[in-house]
Image (cartoon, rainbow, N blue to C red; front, side, top):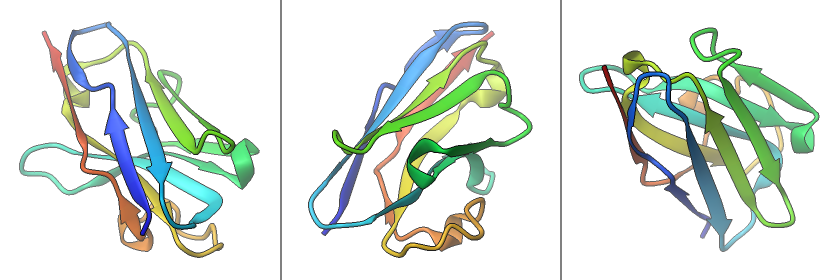
Length: 126
């Protein structure tokens, strides 16, 4: 069974930075696509970033483009999300996600992922 564990969340002031990590263990899963999502209170889980084809392609939600950077190291089975210039609207629980199948289609849809971490809280204060 694949397990994903996020870390690196915390409380930061507006304009600050955080680096989230996602470590995978156990089982096997597709390395073709992995993603970061977030969920704020009272809102649906939303796409943040994805990394495809072993890092050959990355994609970001418009709200984080230019501020966040997704990366991965397959040998270490670890993925990161570097978050800069944080804003209060970035406050949410952040989740990493992976798939058990090779397709990269619909990578922005959280329903298309099989494995999820427990989430890590990011709070950005004014």
